[in-house]
Amino acid sequence: MLKVLVQGKKGRIAIKKMAEAALEGLGFDDCELSVLLTDDKGIRELNSEYRGKDKPTDVLSFPMGDPYMLGDVVISMERARAQAVEFGVSEGEELARLMVHGILHLLGHDHVKGGRQASKMKESEKALLGLLKEKGLV
Image (cartoon, rainbow, N blue to C red; front, side, top):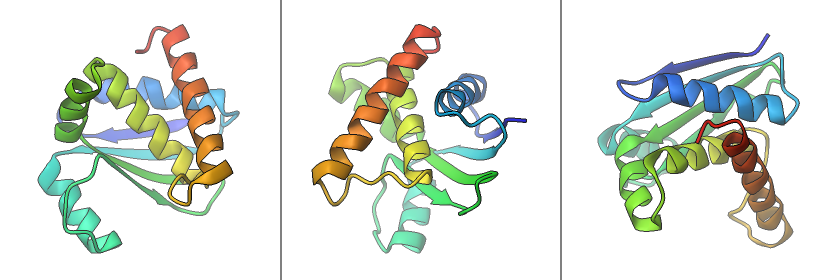
């Protein structure tokens, strides 16, 4: 059974549906994912504590290393809103992109090193966002 737990004040239902559809699109139908929707202050604290970077970021992923318990995705709603304006997309589209991005990191995808890994992650991100659009979730 697929289980997605979303904590936060706004957007929980939409994020839950997006995460479930993305996981199903990746072939995961028996796993757990936790999502925290926070603000810049909250994500900055986590970024500082776990990555040694004392600044806010848009999304963080904390993999559990277990095929059933995928891990946690943390999204800054403030960053999502600002980036939606910056990129000229809806807030829902940017939230979907961040959710997908976070899930892919949980599954081992990486873009930091560049090259083929970054290209593969970008392709997967694009495909999953297309799936979410087809399902009317974005």
